[in-house]
Length: 336
Image (spheres, rainbow, N blue to C red):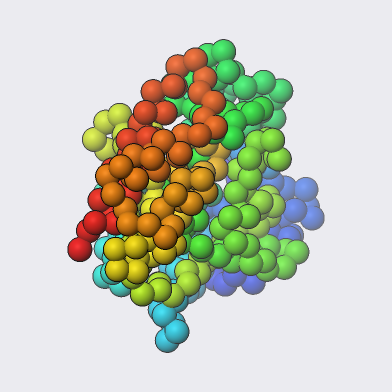
């Protein structure tokens, strides 16, 4: 394995300066938080965002001060440090009360060991788990000019938003954050940026080698969530092909505002089916202003699969999405 330099900054400013110096010297940089995904990428010599299989410089973000905390404001919102572990998110009482969809999503990532080490930022920014990309094929994600899944093994690939690459976004927490209208705070040598969750992720048709708008020298510092309005309900449901330690075949994050029995606002975001968290506005529109009945929930599930374009071996995801959305919406709307 190629040797690399490990850097342990104590502050965000110091991390930014280390990145700037490394880039000026012509070195590639990778960031390590929990490190669970990065370690796998390096061990398998998978090409990363900067085009290298092993970085020249590794910036260890775990040494940063104050970016692993969950802070609630007096106005009701919350700031979540990017290095907050998934276990802490899943078990935080306030997150469970006010943002249940996020706690549930974090609690369904991998195994307890992975959740104890893995971080919010790492889960949001992890690279695709397509077997072609992870096994050294010269695909689009690795800088090549082909998506091998189109004519190959595509059981786990996208049915929405695909082309030219058909990867699915692997994050569990990302659909929850989009459904909650999160904003992402990003740091880098060119300055800090605040990016809405709806603008953070990108489709392959817009940037085939990246899954989000981060530059190679930027990292996610924290995530802000707005105060939950009265009547807010939320949940996350994930369907897997085994009991644990795997990604979603299909998942759904639902955030719903209720005025008595009436749905006054809703966001439905799918996971496991597209190269980014996939919102379904046509399904949401059916709910607003209505009492959620079993019949309406079925119609919402049907609307959620409108526009799906499966590949040869993943059409099973269409009835999965239809059923998961219908059941989840109905259960949430009628829950006490």
